[in-house]
Image (cartoon, rainbow, N blue to C red):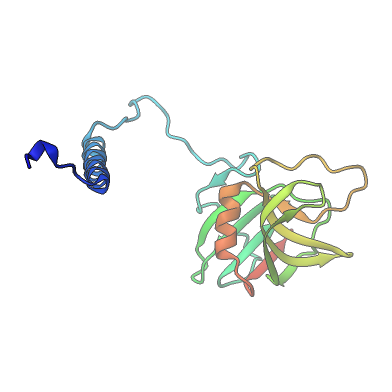
Length: 189
């Protein structure tokens, strides 16, 4: 029987083509990694964090944590600044960001994360995720969360009582990871 009369099994062709594709993708990735990278022009200003950043804008952890927010590992929520800090055990802020508060604020004080829910529908009808409950005020649960689609919350209906403190998705994911059950939440004016 001649060589041309023998057929290779289909799995050999699939294996050979897959191996070839993997090698080609790896070679392109290596070339891309070693290629030129864009650099900022000398006259362009570098982006900076601003104290007037829009709600949900992540900022460097260097924005000062309020003095009256306690010590140790905690989440700090400022009612006046609409800002959250994730503070580690050495009292260093690891992340800070602006938030959109609900219509019901918790009283200033120390709370504990009691419940966490992956996702649900908020009282405003918006699908939300990474819900971290820490307080109840006049029968309204107060929790950090983000809209599943990443949007800012709609204006509340006249007289609506909402305790959701919304944030951008990336900030919500960071708070979800940091704010495990039992984590202290300090609310300051």
